[in-house]
Image (cartoon, rainbow, N blue to C red):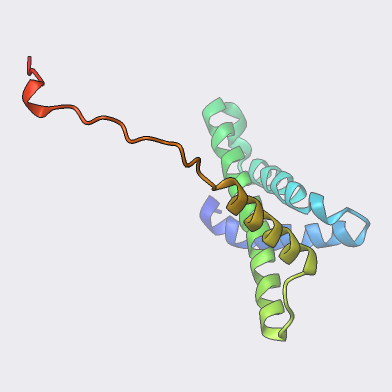
Length: 129
């Protein structure tokens, strides 16, 4: 099976395996790492001929990373869409951290008032070599 076609099947399988891991007690913060590791394992397993050439191993690992990131992104995207459809708002902690980040940035963005403009070079005195 070509790599592109197997990715269509493997990405949802990775999502399911990560969900099984989360239900088994895996902390949610490690779900993305598990998805990438499962993607790499699946890519290497689907391309056994890759072990004969180091560049093919590298290509298979990159394919696995892409599959894992796709699985993590697909899961988080559908979770966010479900929250929007149900009318729920984002978590209060996320809103609080966003507002504190915005206030920190606005405080850091104050510029000193004693800056003087740089003198402009006279174009007539410039020499061209």
